[in-house]
Image (tube, rainbow, N blue to C red):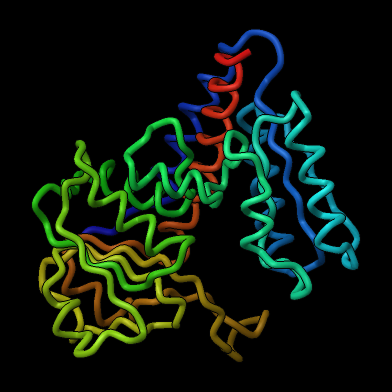
Length: 292
């Protein structure tokens, strides 16, 4: 069994981007990070994104609207950022307050600044294999993780466990694309799938993105499979100082011995998400510069 080190691979990408940005004349790429509220995970994620941006030379603007902001007020804020020529990318951190419709907010971000890849147009561009679009960061990170770990998807059976717009659907479309690093046969499973273990056991590559702690057990995995664990769940653990431990959607202790390769949690897919966000921001900058 080989552990796929997401920290190492993401670090290599960050180093590549830092070197690329250092060669850019004039102003540097700029990302606006919008966070509403004080959700602890969101605070941590935005700090990590801001820190990485600074590290590689991307300008970051952290915008903290009041928790009581209305949807129309948030739209107005996004519209201002869409119109600002000094801003190349916009990320609105989820979750948002229940009074705000997240999908509507994602659609409000201009497609050419949608470095999170959630705008309807960018999701459509994945299906059309249009390279001018932006791919959501976690799915892009999964495909990059596989490629840099020497896993060729061509002709292999990829089973995606989960059908969200954030991970499941886009990563399935990416694996299906007619290009190097893809060309897989893809099955998507979800909560209504019958006889789920029989399907997941067919996977050469199993991507677990269902959001349930340790849901994937050894009886669901074919020996020799590659397992990508996208989940990150907090599980109560009174032996820990903070009272919890982080675990993925895969029962690592029982599944790992069966695998050819597997990602850990933490330290697997998570670091790739931030690296892909920075890559998208640099891409947005270059596309914007080309159109100016």
